[in-house]
Length: 162
Image 1 (cartoon, rainbow, N blue to C red):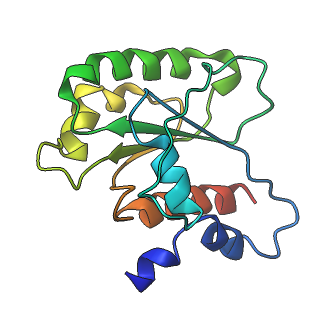
Image 2: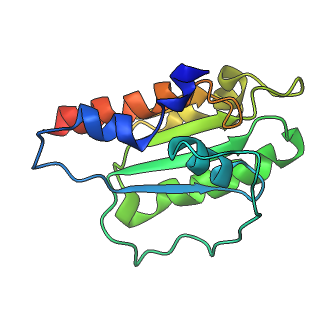
């Protein structure tokens, strides 16, 4: 549990320490109830047991230049896989997101009904996205499991651009 408390944006910043040329511009998206707020609280090392549901408008093309897209999927909500696949596909087709690396968090892996990340990747046809790097990471924003691995992937991508 002590290891989980060290997760988060602080660890990302520590890895990038001394890199004055790098900026961290990440957009976090996903369907409602996918676990975006819980993931943010986990990254901020805040208590994930007190979540107030939030609603944010859809992504718009007027967003500033983005370096990474983090997309959160509820791995236990199989009924919405098609919907999440369509939304992800629309995002990938956005002109100003062309080539932007995508980290997909297959969230809620702590639930017994969660689909494995590999099954989700196959169902979303992620292998067809050849114009960018992507990673699907199984995680649980509630327990913190897998979150650090995803953030490490983002760090490694940023360091490659350096």
